[in-house]
Amino acid sequence: MLTILTKAFRVPDLRGKLLFTLGLIVLFRLGQVMPAPGVDVVAVRECAGSAKGGVFDMMQLFSGGAMLQLSVFALGVMPYITASIIMQLLAVVVPRLAALRQEGQRGQVKITQYTRYLTVGLAVLNAGTVVTLARAGQLLPGCPRPLLRDESLLSVVVLVLTMVAGACVVMWLGELITDRGIGNGMSLLMFTQVVAVFPGFMSKIFVLSPAGFVVMTVSGVFLVAAVVFVEQAQRRIPVQYAKRMVGRRMYGGSSTYIPLKVNQAGIVPVIFTSSLLYLPTLAAPLLGGEAETWILRNLTAGTHPLYMTVYVLLIAGFAYFYVSITVNPDEVADNMRRYGGFVPGIRPGRPTAGYLAFVLSRLTASGAVYLAVLALLPLVAFAILRDPGTQQNFPFGGTSVLIMVGVGLDTVKQIEAQLQQRNYEGFLR
Image (cartoon, rainbow, N blue to C red):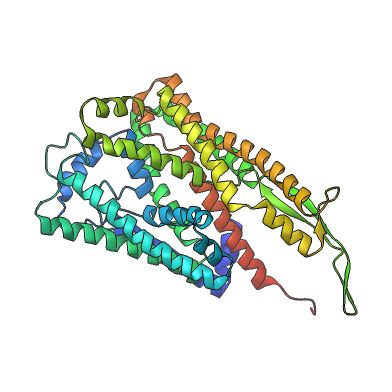
């Protein structure tokens, strides 16, 4: 990693991209700590520091500590990430979007435009919910002081518009990193959000239990190593291309493979599951009564059996669903047959599609089990240790580890690929 970064900074063009990306990340973090207009900063800091566990740690993790502080970039990258996932799902259902996906670059530009519109809509909904909870005193329950200096309608509208504008600026920063930086813009910003809260979580663990800090650090290192191993694992399906004559030239006759990752769905199932389990907790204060008590007792504590069961089932379901809409075995088999490719021992066409679907189903089952184990590992450990203080501040959850490892590996691969392009000397030298 350090060797790759050292080589990258020696290339002037790549060094400029890295510095440009770092500058935008610094600007992004500045917007996450900058309070929005009309927010009582002192009250927010006092109450956010006393809020622990459940939905509060999840909100801190997904927003980099910005949402509970009601900052300008309080919404972070989640509106855009959610909009992108929704557009991928709609592309399977809506024929118009499916046709745009097949139009190449022109269609992708149109889908990106629709994603931006959906991001703004989700940002308005999310910001309105957060400000309404803050105005009603339910964003940080138990806070004795009001979080907003002025609760008039005009101040609330200005606060919502500020957060929505902040979400749009975050979306613009992510696209700038993708176009002019080292790429992977929104993923890098999400990586920044997760890493930003890590020192705070680790310091809380150390204060609560120094021995627990050592145990969690060691276990976290092994967990990260295991995640790196599985994320890099793939099933390579061999493909042979037959020789064919085009005019007077002979083409084909080469051998390649189709790489299918064990975790083909990536972090999307975990994000989907965390978002769905976050919604009941967010709506619990609005429901009140027995419904609020039941939700807080069963769907908030990570050590509850019902929470674990729902968590595992949702992760497995979303893993199969997402892989089914992103990888089409019929399309892959048809493209192979069109260019004279075949899997050794499998007839082209429908038999190849069936074989690919069978392999993909088995890999998805392994990937779903891997995601479920990764997500449940800290919850089961806490149920055994029965240390609620440590549980509330545990940073090595499934979502955080997957985001850090996945984005880190992709970023290193992109930098390495750009280095190889610039160091390529050609055939004539």
